[in-house]
Image 1 (cartoon, rainbow, N blue to C red):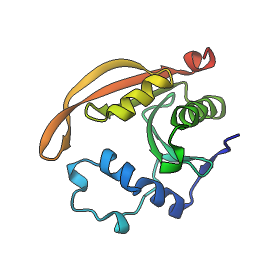
Image 2 (spheres, rainbow, N blue to C red; image 1 turned 120 degrees about the vertical axis):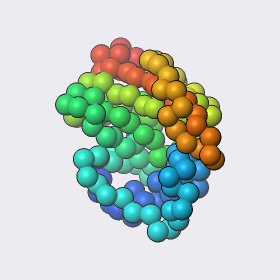
Image 3 (tube, one colour; image 1 turned 90 degrees about the horizontal axis):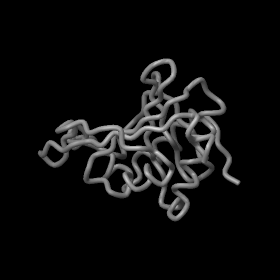
Length: 153
């Protein structure tokens, strides 16, 4: 069973966010000059949900009921990503005030799109030319799921 907990362990957070597989897919062109080994996280208004030793889900409040979620799973999560993310979403739905979860995924990140669909998120729109990668503006696909929908899975 995967243990979920809010963490402020900067070493673990940094390790997850700068893992080559996460950094390569999740960073945009504004991060090209940032060296992953010199990267640091300012906790601010976001929180980090540790999913055992598999990685984290990052939650950024949009308002009092909606959370923008991002995944930073380590290679050890391969084959378990949907289970880990669904468990994390359920944990957030049951342990926070948030009842709506959204994710903006660059259209080239097919793995993340498949993961969003595998956990039951629905496509709710496209934010055109909203992400800069390798000098190109790309669309982001917006996905969302409600607490009610999570509870019926």
